[in-house]
Length: 431
Image 1: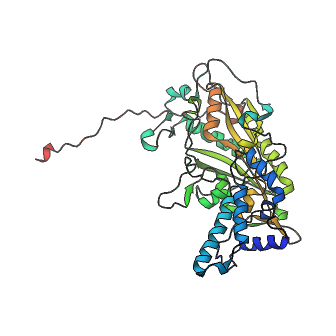
Image 2: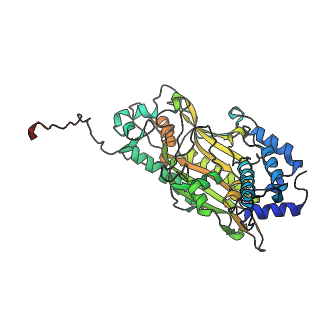
Image 3: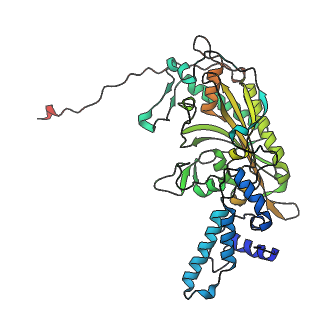
């Protein structure tokens, strides 16, 4: 068995979490739960959890790297510099593999792929059906929606007048709802370090399509996919007093995602490369995280129910949890023009997965410290919510009957434009 004593574990943590060891000269590393990961008695449970979550992560590789570290013999190297480089390489390998091990799934999370999602309840009125237009077809004559593909690619869009007003009304409505529940407003950057996105659980796998936009001149910096990342950067390397928990934060931010549509129904406004989102984020004690997740879901449910959308709340299965979530709930709204249920919000309990990687801890009243738990959830995402509202509340005259909670429609005079003729230079008068 590897790591047979708590003394061995304490030595491991000292090397892993500090740069005190002269030989390693390692950077400060996340405080991963190696005491659990390296205990061979836990291997069956860890392997089963990995298998249930799309098989990403290799616990045997973690054990192999630790075995090499444990058996490392400095005397076997004539060159101390080479020995040091090899030792650092082994530690890097240990962390690279350990960071890929997913969070443990909640005991009540359904096991399996997307088809195993469990419907918890339905929200809102009976779903609207019939021959209805998609959101994009509905507003075609409004001169309010444009797709400037020559500027920013096939998933770019621009709103004018009515749609721009609708977007703002939806975002303001959701933001006020969340603040009324005790969430503190914060403003965070849309540019974050890749170290932060990785700590949140977003890891780019080699050979796979890019999952985030990276700056060419600053390859360690990327555009944020959600305010969760900016808020995580805000609380990274922080110690929160136990008496100040739970810490509930809310931010409005632009979100950037290089996603690809899976069907025709996901075209145009449904799946875009940038949108605006109201995001909730909670830092709490371990025993509070299940209740905090439920509270986030309650806020989400209230928002979409009061909007008058027909929705279903899903308890997501293990293969849909990603790396960080222990449990996740999605809300899907019925989009009658597309005739599909489309995801409009998600909420996750990440337990201590993110906090360990962010070096986010709690100081108890007795002076001791422990890892916080984090939860997050989408209050509203602009384009998806707009699709659901437009398709649900369209009128026979191709207008929009606004949901009561948003107030009156703020239709403004459309901007009339024509396509210009190609411009060409004439130098004939110069000679």
